Length: 308
Image (cartoon, rainbow, N blue to C red):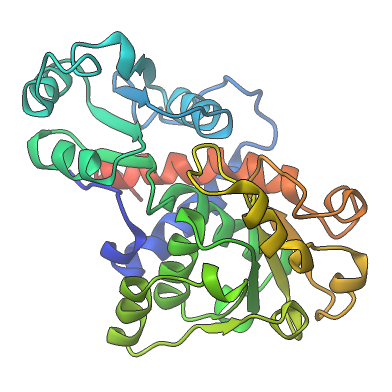
């Protein structure tokens, strides 16, 4: 049994193995319909239990299809429908029940500690479908997408992030260490990555490049990532934050300063990107979203120790 909680805690060779497997599986599905099962049905009879404490579209759909295509099934729960959500049952007791009924547990939560507690008490694999400080399944899929489009290892590319320092960026920073790619970050001074994240990068003898000038950040970039400036549960002065990011909007003029970069966005989008860039030829956001299915299949196989 293996958990998939934070990219920084997973060996680089295992992350590369997941991406390699996902590439093979995607190629093998070219002539299959959405709900047709992969050859050999490697997770036949397995049940993935999903629990969502935050809204979800891509994570919910992609994990549903991922386990289905591997021959297993899924059951989706909402925490407010459980005794746990009402404060009437402990995480430990809930974990015991989940471990009795299911084979794997995917959690999307607004509490990092809850992921850790479930990992402590579950006797089945736990997958972090998103937490306040991490979005590992999204970013590993993004690495897959970059390499698929650019047709070269991500270590040979310059990656740029324009936007807030959030859970997606935290995982992208972890990926930059694991896959050894150059990462430039463009954001206002007040919204730079935290000390803990930067200390971890330094501890691993790596470096990230932070710019408060968006033009400098995108210079030489092969890939430009972005995310919504105002997240769903962002507890900040929204007007002030939007004002702080007014010069960090990704438009065609900014894209021209890059190295013919492609544009990626984890969705949902906001005003951080212009319509002509988001829907333009350099944007691959729909391919990026679909690839979640393929990579999460390989993540599931990794967690169940069935990765080829």
